[in-house]
Picture 1 (spheres, chains in turn blue, green):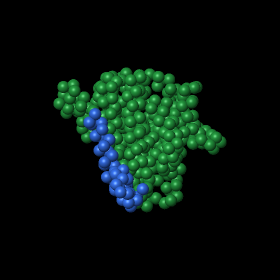
Picture 2 (cartoon, rainbow over the protein chains, first blue to last red):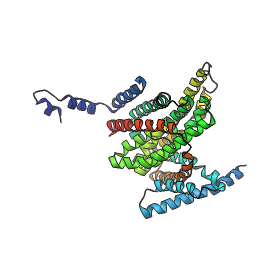
Picture 3 (tube, chains in turn blue, orange):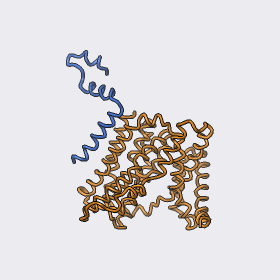
Picture 4 (cartoon, chains in turn yellow, green):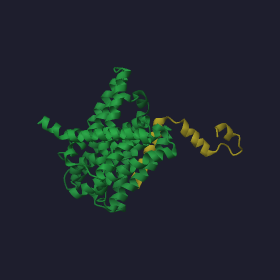
Length: 46
Length: 335
């Protein structure tokens, strides 16, 4: 579902769709940095 | 001296070449991937009739053929494509290396309560490059010989299990070549099975799997030094051990990776003709086939029974965690 579709609803864009769109638009390197940090954080916190 | 050494390995190498030829012929006849057949043939022979003593020195050269094949494979690597994903791939490799090291250490100590040194051997073995990593860190960790034997048996068991299951899972999920290659390179254990599983899936997946795995292997020196310093401090030292040196780091470094980079550089600079690249490709395919027969003969099913249940559960839990997370990450970043 695109942003355009979501914005037509009364409640505004679906946050999940918005997050997905933002993720898709991210640069590949940033995606790797975010996921890598998440993965390391999980094990460091535990 | 050289002539005597050569004479000692020739019979075993001849067995490897014969096995490779049989795998090639059988593959055409039964329609199964020849690399998987080569490994399977080695396993069946080694665990049924056994390998004769006169062939053992030659069979043990399989690692050399694998490394030589990887060096030649550099000619087929699309360096521009690799550079375009290089940073993201490196970030994922380092993150998952750190994750798996810490995960195995935590689970081994806190959940299964196995001795620290055995846990460290398993952590290094699973996170970097299997038996080579276990051997590299064992002196710094000051592990006992039975702990080394346990760790080696456990890692070899998972080499066999992942080699058998990964290509099947990849096909079941219909993973893109790049995703399968990076997933196998990050989450499988030793270099040989990673290359075998990758090329069994597809040539492109094999190249990505090998490159990703090499990215892990180059950290062997760093991890060996970190463990040596950690255990020296545990034992009351100041951490300034003789092993924590540049020479030690260089000693552990997998030098064939430099050959791979050199060949990839020469090929991408356009210094090789298409015919030469095609010749090198035939060369590494042949070397992999020979190496994988030897890899199969090194899998001793009887020996795997020596592994204890706790080390097995430690590595199994790490494999499941790393496998699931790295597959998700590879799909989110590279699909």
